[in-house]
Length: 179
Image (tube, rainbow, N blue to C red):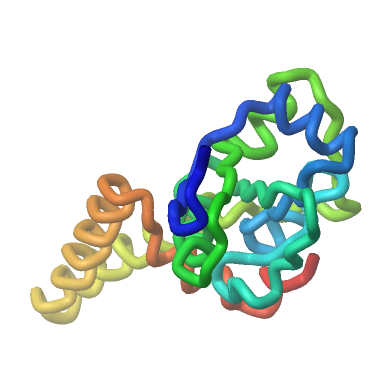
């Protein structure tokens, strides 16, 4: 039996999550950004983006498990840790998010407008900055090559840590805030 002071974050599979949702036993929270949610989301998921995540905004409904999800499980794990730090005792992480839900054969809700994912926006921005730094380094001053190096370091860090600083910045742009 779990003691009141034990705090845990547990992974949950799509089939179990589906059962919980059908029985009304789970509160599913999508911590992706509004543009990602608008493009496609799991029905009945509530949007609370990690970029503005506040544990106080997570309803604590008696008898309901709090389940978080994103794309791969990194952002939902970060949000889960915030909930645990705020006093929640058990939080569930649905790794794989929308894709795992679809892979299990369950329906998703799709938005009206197609949008570029934050990952694609980040790739475009990073590639543009590397190109700009290289061109300016050749034309104007070799010091501009540092821009390409800094972007490269950021990409390596994002790949190793699962935390994408470029996506975090892009998520704050107004056109990415619409759900």
